[in-house]
Length: 401
Image 1: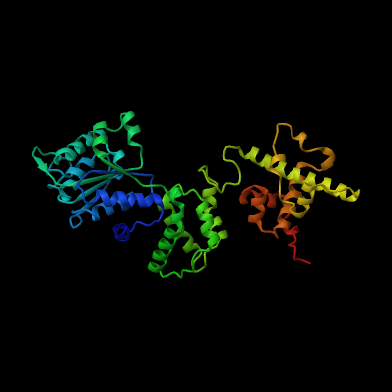
Image 2: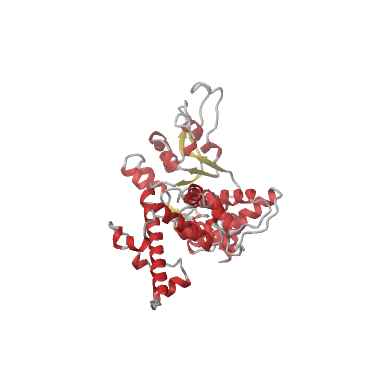
């Protein structure tokens, strides 16, 4: 445990979750052993930090570690970058040049996004892995390097092998030891640590007053799916600290900043409607729910006026008019089964929707965010309808006289 704590401090890997502790244990085991390691995980999970931790815990810690992003090197020059070239090997090669493998001799080379390397280059990578031999571009002499290889990918290499896009022999040679870095959504209990670390580092380096994040703000952030993982979280924290400069970050600020992401097609627990529905169908369901509430109100008023006894559900609706019984809210192909013309009179659909929006805004003291959530629609849709119906100035707050 002491060794893992020390490793966590020196590597900068944050987290107390069980999954990240397993990653630390793997690093502690494979670090001192000269063996090839394959790090897998989604983009933005921190694979490079894991690779650096392996290097720091190895016997090569005082030797160079060369980081290569294979996906960022054009196919035409990747071999020259990796293995070097001789003078005159191609246009522009004015002198001999060492490649990354030669420069990393006695140290470690980290091949990030290994799945992006061309098949022709993969053959030469396999040769380096097996016996440390390589040839510079335009040369005929075989050179040797003593280098430890750590590779990483956000792709499924097994699937690429089946598609013929990645060599099977290289795949099995790379995956001697595999470390899976978990996505942020699977270690969400670590989010608070990241938020605090990123916020402190950013505000200190930019002379920004830091007043912290409200618990509600952190709770909302934990509900988000974070498809970009830790990288996305870091960018989000830095962005909101700039936009809300000097303020304590509230839940409302976080919701407002996350709003563009919420409206995308990425799965998100904060979505107000099912992504699988069309916009028209979603709005139709919202209107039907509000019609159902209006019908309930009409029935309650009728019973009160005629001195009839209200049942339990109707009493609950008086106490909480925005509480809906899910069992009675099934939307069928024939809306007439739950909405009767005798209950809503001669009002048009637009009038009913307008009335529902006015009531909801009044109930929430004109808090549009809360009203949109209660109505089951996005804030953007609510703003548009408020403008279309011209009801913004007509809403009075509860405390207004």
